[in-house]
Length: 232
Length: 379
Ligand SMILES: Nc1ncnc2c1ncn2[C@@H]1O[C@H](COP(=O)(O)OP(=O)(O)OP(=O)(O)O)[C@@H](O)[C@H]1O
Ligand SMILES: [Mg+2]
Image 1: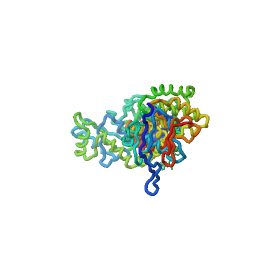
Image 2 (image 1 turned 30 degrees about the vertical axis):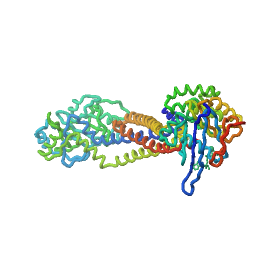
Image 3 (image 1 turned 90 degrees about the vertical axis):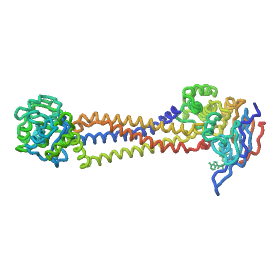
Image 4 (image 1 turned 120 degrees about the vertical axis):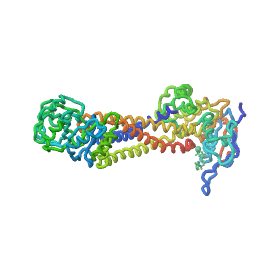
């Protein structure tokens, strides 16, 4: 169903602070993220990438403009509905992995399902299958501090996908990993995440992983300068 | 979600242990101190408890407790017996005597003299001997703890000779009495015999103990006695309360114990509150992650309260167990004999533990409520 729109930003403005310390970080973003593709959001540090995806994820509210996700305007949703929306439709991968240190790999991967209301036992069964696909069959019962960065990020990928979200949002997923591990992780992400009814958004600096992008949006200073199909 | 909350809690063993010990310490302190307090102050009414047959106590109008006594004239006994509603009334003698122990040391002892004909006034539990033998000359009964103190290292036995105020006394029975406030040695004898030990002649009744007639309350009968005789009379229950309140109001016991209990509560609140706050603070990033991936605030608050509740429950159980062990062990020594853990003290300490936990959870809850999930994208 390529050609359909996962995320549609219209005139998104974000100001931080107020009065004399007010800083405009996003200057009216118009952007459409397609379904069934991996879209990279790239640009220099401080240009507003994280701010933009935080707004798309409903973690920040824009100062002005609208964000439609899967045809629902999340800027007009009640807070409690946004939270439910995140639980059901979104998956997250962070630079710092952000696994729960008290849970094993398989428990961590199961968390998204538990948040949706599954029991931990049922969730672990599904998470376990996914971890196998990510090459983690021997590390399922280890705790995060017993795993390498690359292994932790695989667990994080499993957590982001286990509940089968339509949109996966990932901020610098390879920035804490060495080049080789970063490539591996991106390869796995590509294998398990790409689906024709899913949009994957990856924020990155890391031009070594650009080949994994279907589309690349380039940002600078709070604006999207270009949005094109990837040719690398 | 609650399974995750528990794993989170148990993961940080040191902090979990600290939290549990904080609650346990508070609970232990409150139970132990209040248990001792109740044990101590109820001793003030021990003499009354030891005469369960009587439900009315008559005494001089100025008497405020069991230790400061003004003797009644012998004729008052007949007057009290004549008051309507009095089923029976007998004299009770109470005095302090000096006793020489087996190895020649002197100890203070309580001497109770009971009615010659009925022997009413003896504690009901006989450990050894026969109380009818008290009718023999120079015969006395002694409390179990008294025996152990006077004849150290000797097994309980009858026929021992004691010197009460330098006069011969033969032990014919050993009785179990309620622990007293001042001395653990109590001798019991007939009223007439008691007067010989103290050499005091006539008009020496410390109390008249009486029973209300069936169908009348001791309070009613007491009022009759007061109006007919001008003496002070009250139900055994009221007298016991009065004696206990005298101790509460006129000694430093409530203040010193109250201070320790208050410290226990405050330290509990401060330590547990701060440590729980620290626990939540250290796990705040995790709460933020859970929030970002779609956990509602209500759920997160539920997690925090569950964590606090588990800490409270485990800590309270440990503390209560410790307090129970204390009273189990200490209750066997004569000094703490009769001390126990009243259920209402345990319940009160439970309420304190619950308060500590709710306060700690409320304090920590704010952090979870206000943590910005957007921080998950920041380093
Ligand atoms: N909560 C905030 N309060 C104030 N200013 C903020 C806040 N968050 C971000 N900013 C500012 O907004 C600007 C954009 O930040 P953002 O994190 O979106 O950039 P970025 O493109 O993700 O950068 P990087 O590549 O370094 O992660 C920066 O100047 C930053 O200082
Ligand atoms: Mg960023």
